[in-house]
Each structure stands twice: as structure tokens, then as C-alpha cells.
Amino acid sequence: MRPENPSQSDHDEDAVNDLAETAPGRLGGAIGPRGARIGAFALALVGVLLLARGVAASNAAVGLSEASSEGLSIPRWLYVATGGAAIGASALLAGFVTDRGFVNRVHEWRHGLGTRDRLRGVGMAVGSLLGALLIALIVYRGITGPQVSTINFAVVVVFAGGRAGLTMAAYAIGNPWPALNPFRAVTSRLPTGVVDYPERLGRWPAVAGILLLIWVETTTGVTNKPNLLAAAVAGYAVVAFAGAVLVGSDAWFRNADPVSAFFRFYGRVAPLAWEDGRLRLSLPAMRLVEDWADESRRDGGDGQTVDADDTRLVRGLDDVAIAVALVWELTFSGFVTTEQGASVIRAVVGVGLPPILVYAVLFVAGFAVFYGAFLGAARIAVRRILTTRTPRELVVAFAPSLLVIAAGYHLAHYFAFFLSLLPSLSAVLADPLSAPANPVVFTLPAWVSALNIVFVLGGHLVAIWVAHSTAYQLFPSRLQAIRSQYPFVFVMIGYTAVSLWLISLPSTTPAFLG
Image 1 (cartoon, rainbow, N blue to C red):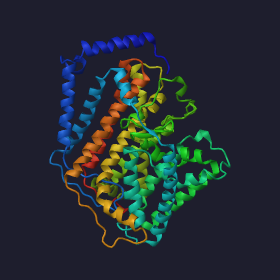
Image 2: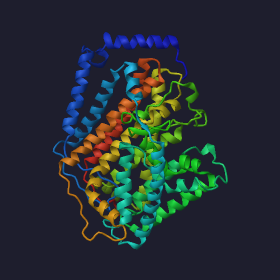
Image 3: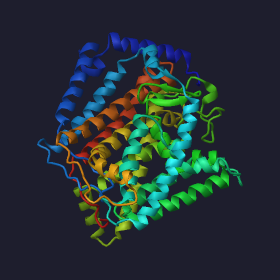
Image 4: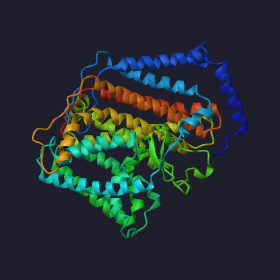
């Protein structure tokens, strides 16, 4: 870590102690620290109670789910504003936790579950065979099966099983893709590495790949055209195999493969992970708080770290873009599958623009806004706290907190979707070579939709704590650590308001794409 000015750090420590003991009025007039805590907690509680209404989230797989939401009985502006206030209140509460030892104990806690190297090896072998079989069946049944999305093996397995279920497993339990990835299992045993992977590219190819997959899912109709989905999966398989052979299995799946990057980033949120050959349990999302105390692990000028073991998840702006993309892609799919979003797109197309151009501009511009907002927060933070750290260092350090937000978004979009299609998923997996004669879809009780609020707010609240812990890793001064978070919290509040607004809207088939 770059040492901060010692005199400035001492001054800041005195200032934060004064703030906690004698000058809480800066936060709210004459109230004391206890009053500020109570007020912030009350605001957060009121927000959660007010928001605990039934609403349904949308998702891109509209070919499988035609969900609609009931109207809110409270004004939508109040609903959205209160959600943002709840996040702000949680940040205020986190700011009062200034015991560095306690903060470190929370994210450093680990519990070993025993050595399972042999079991892991067997699981990897079985998993890769299962992954190869599933991909073959997806391509085969996508072409030969009934071209009805609700009963076709390919569509149900890819979207209910993979897009929803496997992703939820990644951030709830641990990253399953290394075990299921058949391409890595095969290419790791072949002579590969015809050319060296260009290190200057970093993980930007994975960023482009993730955005391309989102675009294909949202705009091409693969969610309700099984033969088109089969072609897309076959195309991905060819690219993954060829890329791994060309530049090497490790280089390809670590830097360029979008599916591997997608699951790797979500998997870091999970409480289970293999560390030093042992399966270890941690508190959910706490592995996102990375060690910034060791100077040898700092981000290099080319966006790579000089750390040999390469355990840090986010190392440069390319990794930041992946974290932002995981948040943006759910926001984009949520917007275009709402009635209001479809109305906006119809209105713009009505002036004479091609629909695909409208979607492209919205997709790219929205990602640029989300990405730019996070970069801007880092620049503002550097100016506010007079640190020797650069905006690049701050944005890289705080980016992992976005993954908890993305996990909350994903759960809100896909939890009810997964539950409703669980019978169909079980039926096609039990008999993949024939379509179910009487597909069953669960009709969920209305209260399930209220969980969407819990998922979104819960993700943001945990993200606030991850950012809080990260700040204490970055700065020796508690006041600097607290103040550095504020710009990022404001960005998170913006993300919260947008996501809450989207899940409050009724969903529909995307305009011109259904």
C-alpha cells in the first residue's frame, strides 16, 4: 500500500474520533451517535416495510415466462425513493463501524471443511462428462426437438437450468463451471498454445463476449427459437475449443471465454471455495474483500498485478467492466421486457429508426453510462479525501462490491422464474430424447414476488458492507476510509432506484422482438 501522509493520517484519526464523540451534529443537528444510529436504522426499517409489496421481476427469457405484476398501491416515486433512502441509511450505519479489527475479522473468517483433493478430482471428471453430454443434447434437441420453447430440452435447460439455476448456484454455493466445462477438460490434455495470448488484451475479450451473449439472448429470439439457440450453442463450442487450442487452455478460459468469466465473477460471491487445496467456508460475499495491505499485490500500470499467484479477482479496468456488465445486463433486459420500456422503444422506432439500431444504441449507451458513473465515483473520491491513491486504484478496489448487487438483481429476476419452471426442467432432464406430453408450470403464490424487494435491497446492503471493508483495507485513516465510500454509495443508490423501478413495472414481450 502507498503510505499516506503520517501527519494527515493522525489528524484524520483525531478528526473521526471527534466526529464520533463530540461533533455528530454534522450528520444531524444536535443528535448524538446513538441518535444517528437509531435514525438511520429506523429509516432503513421503514424503507423495507414500505417496499415489502408484491411485484414481479422481468427477465429476458420471455419465451418461457409471460409474467405480469400487480399494480403498486403506493406511489411509485415514493417506493423508489424509499429504497434509495434505505441504502443510504445502511451506508450511514456502516460508517459507525470503525473498529478495524472487527471489520477484518468479518471478512477474514474461514472454516476449513477438510481436504477433498481426491473427491474434487472425481467431481471434475464426472462434471466434465456431464457438461459435454448436456451441450451435445442441447444442440441435438434444439434442432430435432419440438420447436416450442416451453417443452424443448435446449431452451428449458439453457435458460431455466443454466441462466437461472446454475448462476444462482454459483453465487449461493460456489462456481460450478470449472467442473462442468468440457472444453477445458479436453484441451488441457491436448498440445495447445500455438501462439501466445496477447497480455495487453487483458480480459477485454471476455467483456466483449459477455456483452455479445447478452445481446444475442435479448435481441435474436433464442429464448423461443430452439433451432437458433442450438446454432448459438454450437458456435460457442467451436470458438471455445479453437481458442483454447490456439492460445492455451489456461489463457483462453481465464481471459477470453465469456462463460468462464461470468461464472468466475459470480462464484466469488459464494461462501464456498477451494483455497490452498482445501474446501473452505466463509461468510457470503466476504471473499470479495481483497487484501490491499501488501504492496507486492498492487495493480500494475498495464492493468495486471505483479502478484505471482494471481488470486485477486479484479486487477484492472477490464475486470471492472465485467462487474459493471453483470449489473447492466440485468437492468437492460429488465427494461426492454417491461411495458413502459416497450412503449419507449416503439415511440423511438416510430420516427423511422430501425428497431435493431434502437436496441443497439440503448444497449451500448446504457453500459457506457453505468461504467462511466462508477469511474466518475472514483475520481470524485480521490478529490474529496486528498489521497495519494489514483482513481484507477479505487475503482479496481471497489468494483467487487458490484458483484453482490448483480447477484441480488439476478435473484430478483430469476428466482420465481426458476421455481415455476422447475417441473419442466426436471421432466426434460429425466427424459431428454422426448418432449413432455403434459408440461407442468408451478403457479407461485403472490407473496413470492415480494421476495424480489428483499433480494435487491439485500444485495445492495451487503455490497455496502463489502465496500466498507474494502475502504478499511485501502486506507490507514478511518476518516479517509469512511469518506472514500460516499461517491460509490451514491452510485449504488442510483442503481437501486433504477432496479426497484424496473421490478415494479409489468412485464411484456420486447417490442419488435417477440
